[in-house]
Length: 428
Image (cartoon, rainbow, N blue to C red):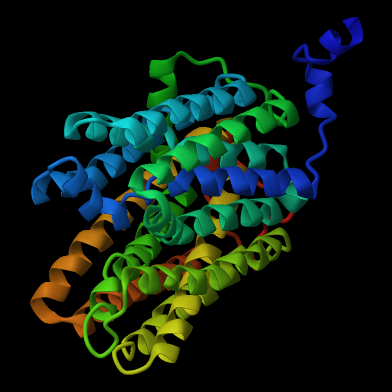
């Protein structure tokens, strides 16, 4: 009994001896995918939710809005806590609170309770980014890109499959069953992670008060040119990503395809093929090919809109475009997170959280613009918009690559100019 109790006492030596096995990385990926899926489960369920709770169309639309707003708030106010507290405890606490929020949604007797539960669900689903930063902190510098790539693949699979899973479960057992199942899975993951994870990563928590912590996030953006640049890349690629995924159901539900919701949701399975290949981008980052990977991925992103523009006449063109787009977006995303985390590992949660705010802005911009543009000018205009976001990103990469020379890290670190970089991060 005594030895068991001693083994559970937080110990820096035990944490430093922790080995990040492939199985643990996959556990991180599953947990990230399960958590972020909660932000997207509601999208195919809105009509059914509205009918069940007698909600007006405007009120039904606010379900998605409140979830996204909660997620955006959590990115800035909750994710940075990973730099100042026991990360395992933070992850488990957020997951258990997420279970409570999902339970509220599943049992909601009125529209008001549902909306509160959805906002809380979005707020707590940012545990995804806490897990990404945690995994990056546990990875050896030479293998960090591979780890971030695998974990990010889990995030993207969760996003892409969320609508498919929620649609199938709702057809089988009603919309509330989606949130009961998610709450059960989240509780199980909280238990497993509490047993498996160490208390901290390789860097000790920062001694900052909460207000100082939030201010330091803004300071990091003001000081680090690479962070600002990579955040802009993130905004543009996710604006392009959201342009497709927020509007593709519209042409597919019309003639000549007239697909059902389930058939449209299955398109996410095609996107998974591209997302899973993002692990290759992580390995290229570990070899010091971050800049080249970014340029090639942005070129592929722009090119993906050519077959997507033919989606009305060819499903094969649509499938090709979806795979290319998801592969390109995730390659840039993995590269971004790997590079910015290496700037200041002790501030990893703040860096990831701040970067993801730009991701949210890009996603919201693409969604709003694409759906409005489709109504006004059709699918061709939507594809032009997605291609425009991609081309702007490619142009930004070309200009900055020419100006910065052989290394992406030309700015100064916390103690002035730095000539050293973590292993594997010198770009070619």
